[in-house]
Image (cartoon, rainbow, N blue to C red; front, side, top):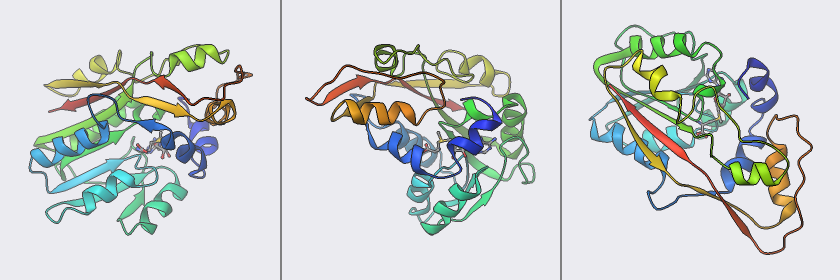
Length: 230
Ligand SMILES: C[S@@+](CC[C@H](N)C(=O)[O-])C[C@H]1O[C@@H](n2cnc3c(N)ncnc32)[C@H](O)[C@@H]1O
């Protein structure tokens, strides 16, 4: 899931992303997106940039706060259109080449997207450049144990993202003085075998996914990390 091919196959439309988003429920630590929102709001940020905004759900929450001006961006033209349709300012931007002046933003958010960026080191340098010196960067990603039980049961192996809970700190520390982390044990619920297979088939893995039949709803564990960088 880590190359430019992903952008064209996965995010040309919002369909796959919506199927995946729909099954997740927060765990005991709460909703990771809400925690990222709270970090931004607690910092007092006024100018906020979101990278890889997808369908714009997070940007819309920011845009609803009168003291915040949000610039939502995504490399997919369709995702930008869906975000604009929510009434949120959005533009097509590749995270590796940000068309913004130095020190433009108080906060930058990159949620579930850095593992798609081929030159992440360049993207992180760009984020640091457009962020004001006292600004905050929030990034969300998943661990290699994320949905590992479902993937294994369905004939696959755990996914090892290029930017994960495990390898994220080292990558971030190359660009930020301080990297804090918070873990979230989320859960994906599926009504039946067909809905679980539909989810698995939204992913680009070249795996002949299969599962035994189940008729009672089942839940599978996820692991999400929120990084807060300054
Ligand atoms: C897994 S989705 C996450 C979307 C959204 N942040 C969310 O949490 O629902 C990843 C998003 O990153 C975008 N993306 C992938 N590569 C990108 C890049 N190099 N620059 C900007 N956006 C990118 C995709 O188009 C997609 O909308």
